[in-house]
Amino acid sequence: MFASGYGSNLEAIYTAISSHTLRGVELVLVISNNSNSRALAFAKERHITAKHISLLKFGNDEEIFQKELLKILADMRIDLIVLAGYMKKMPNGVVEKYLGKIINVHPALLPEFGGSGMYGLNVHQTVLRSGKRISGATVHIVEGEYDSGKIILQEICPVFENDTPEILSDRVKEIEHRILPKAIQIVVDRI
Ligand code: GAR
Image 1 (cartoon, helix red, strand yellow):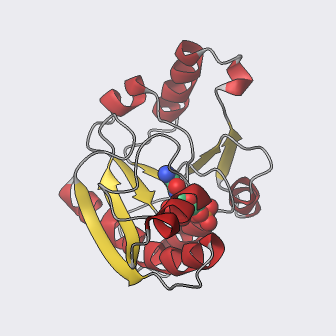
Image 2 (tube, rainbow, N blue to C red; image 1 turned 90 degrees about the vertical axis):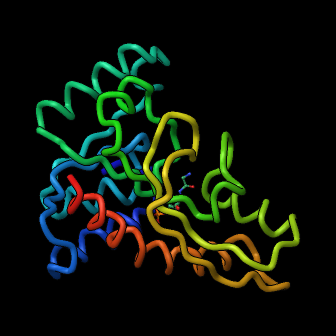
């Protein structure tokens, strides 16, 4: 599991596994690019291996960063990667090695409002500025480019005139917490 910030999606997955709603999955590793993320603290408190790994930590050397990620994933025998609020791009070598086995949750209705720079509250800000009255969440397979790849599940919610990015984010996260564990189950049952 990769997470950058608060980790509410990580928590939703943890809860789904603990309550046996999500079956056949073990949460063994949490990686974050952010050493102060609540996601890392959440994992540590539950004795899940938690690692702070970032491109920055390797002097922005993408090759070393990728090598390190691949080594950890192999050492831990990871067979499914979930990007649960991960704000960085997954290195190409990792996407190629785990093709079809990386799941991402995105806080809008892809293919709209995706791509470079579209993460977290930026996405909701852009949706609000667009004047659209519908948003939602998407869970998809990662296939290289930002926010591209086969969509597994998508669900819509309304956008109200007085919404702020934070209010819309909370509404969308409610959907994410439901559809992300469901989408993981779909992929796990297939592999
Ligand atoms: C979630 O809304 C997730 O969809 C989004 O960041 C938030 C993380 O929340 N991810 C992206 O924008 C990735 N492109 P969380 O830390 O509470 O799970």
